[in-house]
Image (cartoon, rainbow over all chains, first blue to last red; front, side, top):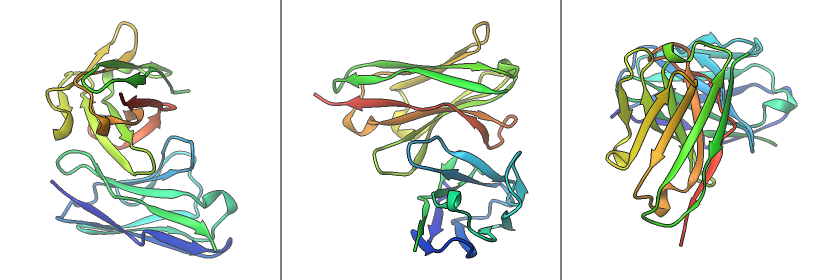
Length: 106
Length: 119
């Protein structure tokens, strides 16, 4: 089973700042990585698929990069609505999720 | 517009059963892989089960194998999760989710339904 490890667990930033979230896979998964955003009381929303492709309707301030075992989600300039939980997901064998990163207001 | 409307869930005793439903609209249901994902209180996301679009193959996370059954009724565009032999650790919000295409990430999600297993 491929394990995904996200860091940091919590990221404390101010609106307008750049957010950089990491996801590391326990073995190579090529570019088979997705990122989701989840706000309290809501279902997750797909942000990025295939490591770097934005899903439909996702603002350009969200970008993804990486391949193999190391991946990054970048939010170029945080908007108030971006403070939320973020999860990475892979499907090299079965679906697994990282444990999540909380982006909170500093 | 894709919509996934969930029903079912609620309170069950340990060892009991519950059935979740997910009514789909806005896409050709039978051709897309569908999944169940759960989230225990205050915890992260955990994939539970999948059913392949077209071939109907089913897949399960190890902790639910032999207890949960995923199925679909393509005539009613509805996904199901039959949960038997429930345990306290099955307590979670359960989401149904549609794959972008078979084996691809989840581009649409249901609203979630709470399952509580407690005596």
